Length: 173
Image (cartoon, rainbow, N blue to C red; front, top):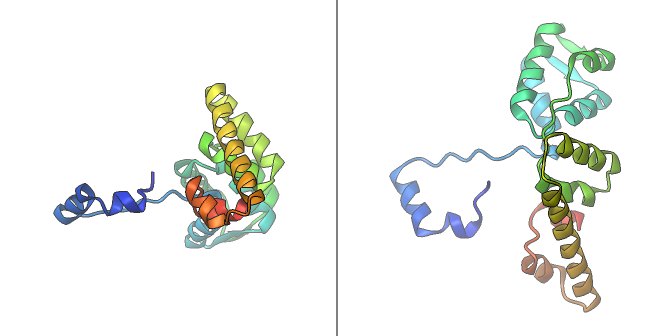
């Protein structure tokens, strides 16, 4: 996972960085997937409509290796240009892999279809139900604490810091 600012500035990390090369391999999150896919399709001189892109993102979420393979398969199956939605539907399998810790983000986004897909995917992958319940309960506890803090006029910035809510999640909260 991504290192936080404290870890990046720690003695062990600065010593390691001084002795070698640091190569950061960031996770491509769901909102970034359409651009990632479009870039790879463009290399093959192919493209997708918005509906087809949404369909593909739903099918490959969380599994970039499979996404890469599906994109290569599209390059072999179809000519240059825009790939028809029906052609895409026939060619692409459901290879999504879900992270239990992204379930809270899906909940905050207010997308019940994605949330249900993620729950079903986690169940199918054999994720422990108690871990799923714990992750959701943590998200709800954080929301409750932030709501309680706001009712006491505590600024959002302070609440986000206290409850370790960072990045895109702040906008969703």
